[in-house]
Length: 212
Image (tube, rainbow, N blue to C red; front, side, top):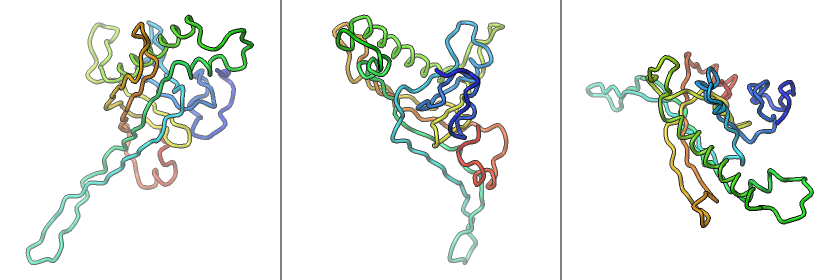
């Protein structure tokens, strides 16, 4: 992690400043509900351990067809543009994560002691629960349940940085160890943009998918 006053190296990582996220992050999701209030210390940001890819973006404009009697074609009446969708795979691999976490350390034994493997399996499980929580409404401080799951900021450097909601999450448990702890986990996620103001053609030309 970098110090909060370290400056980001790319323009679309500007929102990282002061949040405790490394400026060379491979991407992250920030839970905006936990950013406002996190009394249990769950953490409002999940950094991706490996750069997600490939990333698919879906954008679509909708038109109603108006057919005039005797005309050879129909007229298009614009009815709105769908929110952008971004889909990709989140990947976890226990031994690869151990190697990354212990990079540069002097070691007298091979990577992946029992304690390290157990700890990283725990990290994977915590990340799994954190992403799953984005599909459920939060409990509020006054005891009520919010009307919808939280919005979040999705940042994949040089690809997208925008306010979104997680729409779907599909896990594949590729491998577990003899104790049932996760060794390899893949998550197929789809985020949908959740703008809070109107977006124009000029906005798309000027800032593209970087409009958090």
